[in-house]
Amino acid sequence: MNPDVSPLLRRPDIWLGRQCQPESTGIPSGFASLDRQLAWQGWPPCGVVELIGDGHGVLGITELLLPLFKARQRGDRWQLLVAPPALPYAPAWADSGIELSRLIWVSCEARKQQLWTLEHSLKSGCCSLILAWLPSLTAPEARRLQLAAQQGETLLLLHLPESVLAQQHAVALRLQLGPQPQGCTVQLRKQRGGWPTPAIPLTLPHRPEPEPPRNRSILQGPW
Image (cartoon, rainbow, N blue to C red; front, side, top):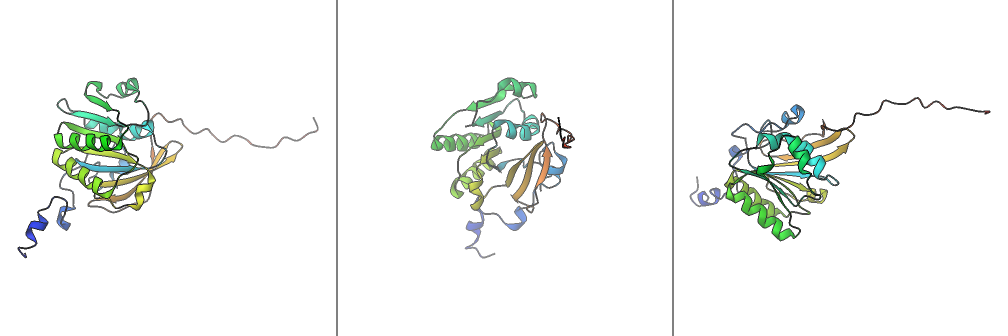
């Protein structure tokens, strides 16, 4: 190898083709159809996962990620909720089996504070999982968060609006979420070590079953 290229390849924000294949098994998502499409056969152990979709609040996202929160519970590490669009309902989290004593809600409206909180929390290595809602994200910001997540061996899930789909971010996984009556659809837009896939329908818990079709025959007079 040309010695002039060696320092460049040692940079943490540049990957070789052989480094793109996952070296470890992922974290089961709780949805077999989704795990079959993910390169890790589940969520990646660390890094940044982008969850892209308009109109998904705290409830829909947490229903999708609840098995992941349970799997990542550790007595020596924290789980963070950063800038959720609504107040998290603690009793529902507790009823779902989440240990509230290790769950932290961080409320900060300024975007600069949100990014500072995420980067330093990731680098600290004190968190097993972080879920955050951001109004936007640039490519340099995504790269910094990805490097911080790898440094702290932490998994960061970012809920972002669909406007970021036009941007290229150096993250481990990008998913686009869509609504459906019994849950949501998940489309893999980008994943390291794998390929994009069509949308996958997922049935989420606590969603009402669809009503059976009613007889819509027309009644005619005279009355």
